[in-house]
Length: 167
Image 1 (cartoon, rainbow, N blue to C red):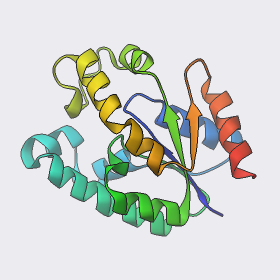
Image 2 (image 1 turned 135 degrees about the horizontal axis):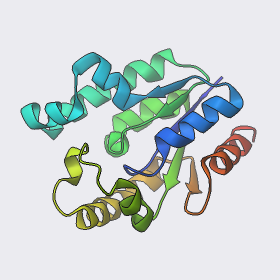
Image 3 (image 1 turned 90 degrees about the vertical axis):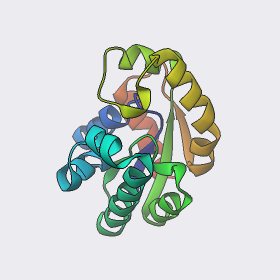
Image 4 (image 1 turned 90 degrees about the horizontal axis):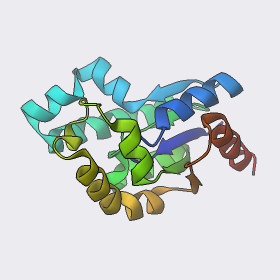
């Protein structure tokens, strides 16, 4: 069995959709950010003490391990995981990548008041729009499938993903 890999912006619903896939289809769920926290500690602390580049190194190491060990699982990626081509190659070797494309307006609404994301420090609206714009083509290039998530429930998104998995 191959993995279902969810990528997209912070706040695009990867964790929520992964939970729906797990619940509805009895699939194991792996969250790369949770795995990083288990092994290396708080992500905000890693960013502040070691910087983004070191965090991306850790993320790549964890992604490689997950790609090798998991079969038939749902893998929810951190927002920047597909920025490194090596991560995309590993993930494609073990599964299909779904880009949960979500409008900046929805992401801003979801993340208002969330201070746990190091890359969103400062003006939330400006940061979300800047990062979304910079990453959109990268997410699209990494994805086997693009799922537009605006106005869809996690369960509807999960059903769309499973339809593609059966192709």
